[in-house]
Image (cartoon, rainbow, N blue to C red; front, side, top):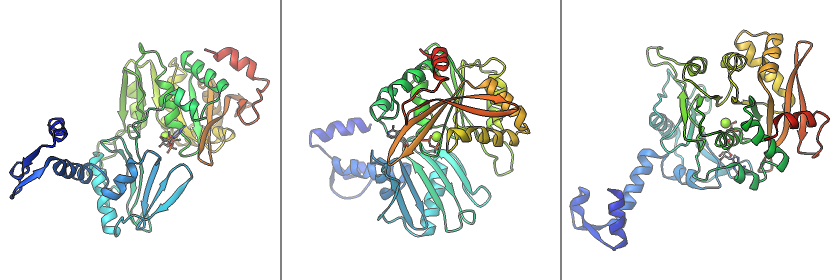
Length: 367
Ligand SMILES: Nc1ncnc2c1ncn2[C@@H]1O[C@H](COP(=O)(O)OP(=O)(O)OP(=O)(O)O)[C@@H](O)[C@H]1O
Ligand SMILES: [Mg+2]
């Protein structure tokens, strides 16, 4: 319908106002389309001002909090002078966005993590948990596809790292993509999954479905929080266990952040190869401590976690972000030594030097 109308715009056509359901004379089709876009923004989007920010291709994050909006255009968060309204309006916006993401947001469920219809990632927290007023964090999905080639052009992956990343995918290594928040873990993971053989079936398990690898056979599983009767919650652990029965060629956990780590490692140690997950960590040296913390949530002691992780995981890809640049800073591997998990960095992009272990790692995982 809309394309038919757009076709008539080219011809400079106009349609009777009655067609638009309003009294009065004729109205231009351009006007109708403008109204349509505004309605779409209001209904599907985040309100005019915020939506305009989300549509800016340079913007990777928009946050709204305490009557103020900030954007990240690659240089960290900067305040922007747009009218976001009083607390009641910000709260209303958060609730409406949550509903669009198919989730509830109210006093009984005051935190929401979801994806809007256009692919924008939504996170929101209501007061009193957010002490100064409703806090909304949005991460737009830009149409630009980040293939590995594009990521190389943006300087995210160097030549050696790219070769090895391709090898890790092709040879079905089990890999952790680690880095601080917003370093590009999900983006890099999606680019790498696109390289997986098209004969493979990928099962992606996420809190909110965000990974969109360009691959013909992907199953997206999304966790679910409890309903008003505190029933029906489905955890990432439940989904990891379910995925084992779905004939997966690769199990992908969007982000390991809780006890599901135990189920994933168990799966990898019982023969599931080619699996990837992302992990928040501030340095590659922090990865063992992060894994130990997640393991503890699942009742695994440090020793058990070290043995399981070292046996299951073939590589760590560590991302860094500084001054607007994101890049693969290190490739590393894990091993258990005297019951403790240790990280050996095999490639450090900062000094460009290959470590002694590099030869062995490279020989094992080259494409
Ligand atoms: N190489 C790149 N060049 C430009 N923008 C990028 C690049 N990599 C990622 N981005 C953008 O940076 C933002 C954050 O990326 P991404 O979601 O992949 O990070 P993340 O590490 O998974 O974040 P989180 O810790 O929140 O899960 C996204 O908007 C993404 O499009
Ligand atoms: Mg991510």
